[in-house]
Length: 82
Image (cartoon, rainbow, N blue to C red; front, side, top):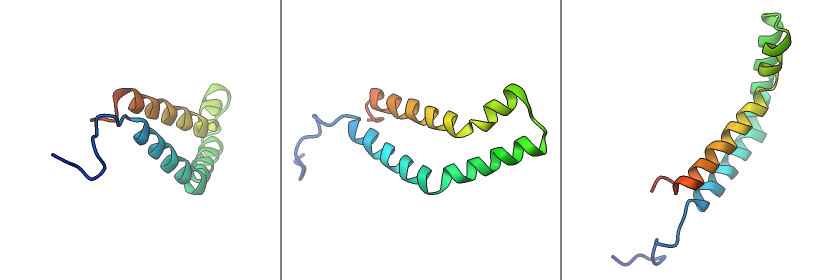
């Protein structure tokens, strides 16, 4: 079958990686970081958390960003699910 863009043999998961990274970054900057920050601050004060629990919940934005980077790298290495 002939496609308009040519052969798909040379395409890899790099395009999915870049697209996913851009979409995640836009969503994170515009909405998600503020919502997560407010939620974590509320959880720490309502539950009177201290120590390790407060540290883990207080840095939720960091853990989500690290998880998303790992997930996008995994997507890149797996070939984009093709």
